[in-house]
Amino acid sequence: MSGGLIIGIFLVLMLTGLPIAISMVIPAGIYLLVSQIPITTAIQRMVTSLNSFPLLAVPMFIFAANLMNNGGITERLFDFAKLLVGRMKGGLAQVNIIASLIFAGISGAALADVGGLGNIEIDAMKKQGYSMEDSAAITAASATIGPIFPPSIPLIIYGAAAETSSMKLLMAGVFPALVITAVLMLMVGFFARKKNYPRGIDHKFTRREMLTIAKRGLPSVLMPMILMGGMLSGWFSPTEVAAVAITYAIFLMIVYKSFSFKEIIKVCKETLVSTASVLFIVAAAAIFAWTLTVEQLPQRVSAALLGISHSPAMLLLLTNVILLIAGMFLETTAAIMIFTPILLPTLLAAGVNPVHFGLVMVFNLMIGMLTPPVGMSIYMLSPIAGLPVNKLFKAVMPYMIPLGIALIILTYVPEISLWLPNLLYGTR
Image (cartoon, rainbow, N blue to C red; front, side, top):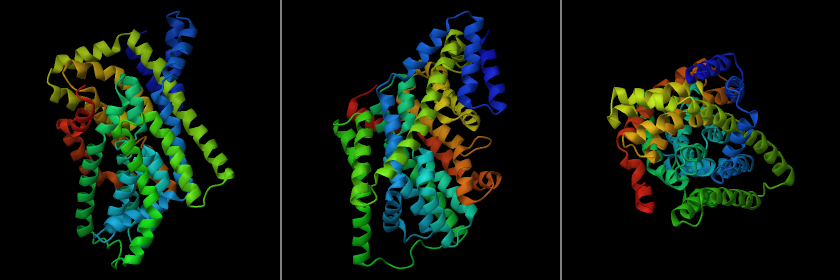
């Protein structure tokens, strides 16, 4: 049973509508039966893939993000972002992007950004006369920042799959996230003039208003600063940062008087469901990727790509094309677990840094969350905005231009990703 046949069965099952984890487990199980490999091998591989200290950060970051969403903290972040850029033309659209950057320093996930800030952002923009399509499109595009800026759940999962330092990966996301933020703000500035977007705030804040907003929002804004400071100083590992995020989120709920044991139980249940889904995909992808490795598919792909070119620039271009297509069909976690062992060896042989590749991979997959047919950010925004997914896919298309520009910059200027981790931890 060849690696190509395994992938073929997986694609057929996925197109029938089966959950992606099941679509990976079935061909892997068939392979084990045909090859007469004991089923205990699959169980061992799946359990081993989850026996990872860095992966412990995933459920904790999900828990922290859920606490923020349910504790009224996101609304204060949005108000604080208004204070920073609300006076600009198209101010609420710019606030949308800045709020996503700040929230990215807490949640580490695009869907948490959409779920946490989406309602607040879209409602505020609708009241100011923005079309629902524009409001939702900006919200979806800005959510791509979440998994790039630290802490980042996809980068932690990539680190486990690539056996690369999670701390280096998280630090590598700082400047790329700022680049993405800048190009999105430039695009919004262009549309603000073309479509005559209103200013976010039509009056200057008084000193008292500024102090009130700062007082309400500053404790929330301090959270990403505390997390970043802990990582930069070396006090916290990624997993410890996640634990600190939970502690601080509970502290904020107490400060804002939104803490209740009933709410905590609700958040725990939401976190269990989300965590089970993510980790089941990780375990299923581990055994699926193992069957492909046994069939030497990574070596064949590597040989094929190196047969085309040994140039890192050309290989990165081909990799971007592959990942953009994969992102159209695959959930992020599954794509990382499947394609990391297939593509990384080729790029390492060409001299590409694994940390740089991790940022490129995750950003490709975040763009994939905005594209049909499986654009998860779009599907989550559809009920929030009250719009059909086909209209949202069309509305978000103009924002593919700045995201594509950012992808090219991050792909071919690796120093943007590598400067900070190299400064803090040395090369490789």
